[in-house]
Image 1 (cartoon, rainbow, N blue to C red):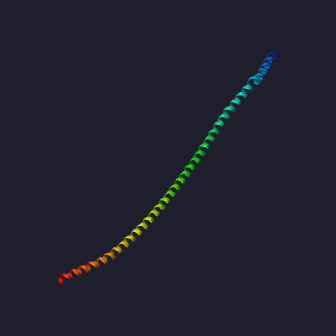
Image 2: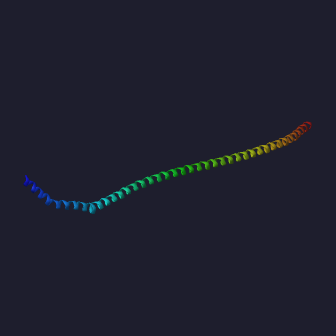
Image 3: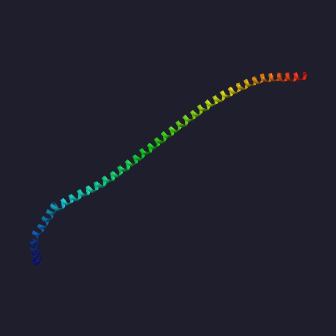
Length: 149
């Protein structure tokens, strides 16, 4: 067994420089290769993740702007419809006033024409009454003159 321990200790003594070299090499690789590689990968992930987040924020911002645009567009449409409604209401009111004025004017003309016609009828009646009396007198005279003859 002593011999086995001696051989084992010889192997361990021979393996120490290799173990030391492996440890040094692993530390060297860690600082020279793996840390910079981890740093580059984390930066790349941060950049892609940041770009993804920026794209999501941009998409949200665009969605918000679209909804604001649609809201403004709808409010503009509502305002235009109100203006059109007011314009049409004013136009109808003006037309109604014009029709009312034209009706009042035509009623006044009709009343004036009726009054003129009534005056003419009264004058014609007076004239006819006077003429009928004169004709009645002429007829009576001519009938009486013929009977006498």
